[in-house]
Image (cartoon, rainbow, N blue to C red; front, side, top):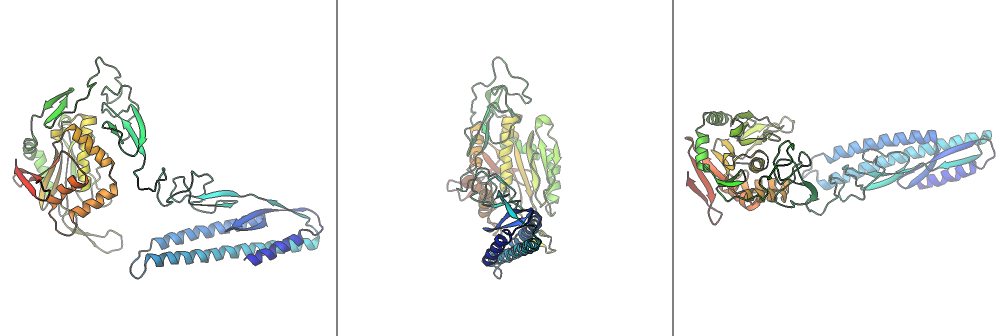
Length: 477
């Protein structure tokens, strides 16, 4: 290729000095550090061909990367195959460049015979293009060409070199630190914020990473529609953290009227709730979970059926507004074609609260306190399975709820799920009650969230860890 270009440039120089009439305008074309000069029409034709070839190359590389690896086809073999493919396509592109140069030389030779060529004007019509594979504004490579080289390259500006161009991260953070996210100060808990700032972890107890409804006109005054901005005197100017067994009512700490056992007794004997338990028990042999959200007592306490995600789990996003509880089932083992290949895979659900169920219990407490003023003792998450029925309650203080939020904000979502599966010993028939209690304590460091087991008669026992953290203590209600 290099020898070809040297001969090409020499012939162009000779032909372009021949006496004639008119002027020939050329455009600079660069690929892989090799620069040639072509007339605009040949340049356009070559550029379109190369873009099509490079787009095809991207598709072939993506297809190859998605091929499953195994003992007979290792990751190293896959990478070697990709390099061979790239080399083959590079050879194709160089062949196209040689063909374009030959076409131009033939045109120059024909024109010189007729005496119509006098000078060559070179136009440097190139732009620096940046490869931004993940679309976060940081680039991993660059090249100068007249037109966009292909998919992922059509960027003429960049915020700098990307530390990982396969990971979308507006902060370009590859150090393993938590990303900087927005935090909102909502002192009165009405969903409107007084100020905001970016930080890796929560700046304090009354800061939330949940997007608010906007700027609060008075963050010392609870107003859901932000319409009341002044009152004399403003309520709860000095917020008080109530002790365990007490809840804040009208800015005062008032003792709970019912403890968790009493609340569970009322709930388990409620005809509507009992009907839902019977229904969910009958569906544990299905291939998709079933469940209901229950509204607060102040809103009538009615049940709303949940829909499913694309897998067998339930879609609980954006369903917890003004809710007091959530009841659902976990399934028995079943078979399902997960990959669309006609092969039935064995699905082995864990018949105990999942990490997402535990997070929903925390979300219920946050919404109850900050937004809907629902007493903590009303809150619950229930799980029905063929091996046991369980209920989570929150028996902690406001400070416990705040600390739980801080703990969640410092943990990586993927790590939480990985630790959950490790603790639950999936596939090893573990002690699920012991392991879920240990997971909540040792990984999530949760405070105030308690576990109850409900028998067929609706009677409840409280499950806790002993001082060693290795034995489940059973306390009847």
